[in-house]
Structure formats: structure tokens, C-alpha cells
Length: 362
Ligand SMILES: *Cc1c(COP(=O)(O)O)cnc(C)c1O
Image 1 (tube, protein in one colour):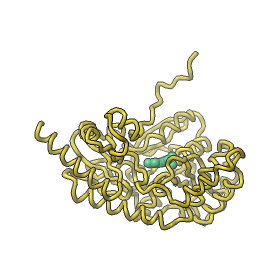
Image 2 (tube, helix red, strand yellow):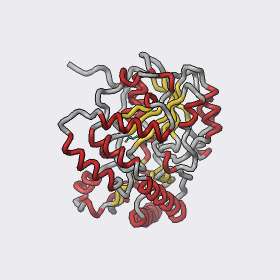
Image 3 (spheres, helix red, strand yellow):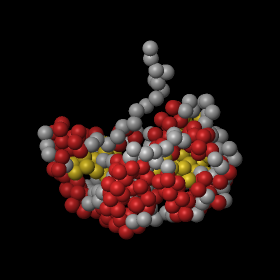
């Protein structure tokens, strides 16, 4: 026997891991610089690491109090009701919860192209249909209300990533408001702010007070450095009441993840340091890479290098792992995550050597 027809489904293509690449190349993982998954190069807050160690004593018990505590902390941070905070295993988990809450079979969702593949994957799991709106390289991947509305046709969910992955572009607040007003009342606009901490543009979360068709996604994976724990959340309309209990997996996040997130939220200095470090790295890449780059408000920079997969492969042989953007539909581009100062410098030097070499042999 077989699973259901999965032929229309796609796989998530992650950035490659250090151990994996080190094994392939016969190198020591410590010699590699991994700037392919937008992780925090400074790790997690030390307070979060301590919280994980302490939580180790509690792991035989289902996580309940910690879930309530994190939800309360987030509700306070965003000035919302606790019912509007949907804690999840990564923001990816929150995407699933929103799909479950919103989609009847064959309901369409509208997602950006290029864009984050999990929106469409989640919709398909939940028997939804996937349509795309185009972000145009010629317009620097600009995102306005019309960029979305031009392709909008009453879809049940409309995804906007701001800052966008992999382009780094943001959608201005006025444009988000125009989009919220421009769609039908029963279309949910989901603003994915996975990289929100790195942006000048403020969060759209306060618009939850004024619009009933808005949800926000946030994560602890990026600026907070907790990618390995899988913890994120959605902020949802006030009118949804107790829907969370009906769509979430029981005990959505682990005791360790919850305790770490509570501690990480409390360490604003670590986030600030991480954001400043990313800003410096962005500037370094823009200023010193011998290839055109796109403006970014996230912890990565999209770069136009000609043949993304050739450049990424050649850099990898030199121990620098960056993301070939072919799987995003941008085969001419790579995405470089912001590293520590030393990592970013080495990545740019290596990539410049690779670019010069490829040009010489072309
Ligand atoms: C990384 C990322 C997420 C969520 O990641 P989680 O680790 O599941 O929290 C969501 N959206 C985008 C665009 C991302 O790049």
C-alpha cells in the first residue's frame, strides 16, 4: 500500500549542515563557516542555555506551566490577550496551525514567488490549493499592496514575508494596511516576521487592534538563536477565542524550548548584540563582495552571482557554506547569512576568489 497521492507535494530544501559538508569534504567541522541557514552566529543567550540545563530535570513531565508562562510573557510583550498568542514548534508549526484553522479542502492560498516554501507545503498537507504572486527581480523584489493584489483572487490565506526570505526586502506599513483593506473580509493576511528583529520597519502586530483579518508569525530561531529547539508563535485575531485548543498539537512545544524562550525573551542585550552584528555583516557584504547585492533588513544578503549553484559549490570546497538560491527559483543568486565579523570576512574573501576564478575560466 501507498500513502495518499503526494505527487503535487514538494520537499523542503534546507541549507546544508556543517557535519554533513565536513564529512563529504573530509574536513574538520571547525574549519567550516556555515552561513546558509540564517542562524545566530553568536548562539543563544547564555540564560537560555542555563534554562535548558535546568529544564533537563523536568523532562519526564508534560509541559504545561511553562507553556502558560511563555504565552503570558508574549501577550504582555505584544500587548494582546493570551488567547491571541499561539505558541508552536517553530514558526513553521504556527503556519500549520493557521492552515488547520483556516482551510477547508481545495481552499486556495496565495504565496510569494520567490519565497519560503513551507507556506505552500503546509497548505497542501491541509488539502489546500497553492497560487503565487510574483516578486520581480527587475524591481528589486519590491513588495507593495499592489504586488500582491494584482494576483489576488479571493484566496483564503495571503502570505507576506517581511523581511522577505531570501530577498531581504520589507513591505512598508502603509502597504500592509492597504493590503489588509484591499482583500476580502474572509481572507487572512499572514505577515511572517521571522526576521522582524533585524528590520528598521516596526512589527505589524499592533495592527491586530484595527484589522480582524491579520495574523503575525514570529520565531525564536533567528535573532534569539534557538533554531535547534523549534519554538515560535503566531499572533492571531482577538475574535478567534479558543480556536488554538482545537487546532494545535497537544503540548505544542517542549519543556526545554519553552523555558529557553522565556529566558531568551528576558535577555534583550543578547538580541541587541545579535542585531547590531547582523547590521555590520550586511554592510560588509554590500561593500566588499564583488557582485551585485540586494538591500536587506534581515540577517542575510541576497547576491547576484551568475551561477548560484557553481559559486556555492566552489565556495563550499573552500570551507564556506552559503545558500544556492535555485530552490527559491533564483538560480543566479546565492544568499549569505550574516556571520560573526571573522566569519563574514572569510566568506566574502572566499567568494571573491571563487567569483574571480569562475570569471577567468568562463
Ligand atoms: C526561518 C523562517 C521561518 C521559521 O522558522 P522556524 O525555525 O520554524 O521558527 C519562517 N518563515 C521564514 C520566512 C523563515 O525564513
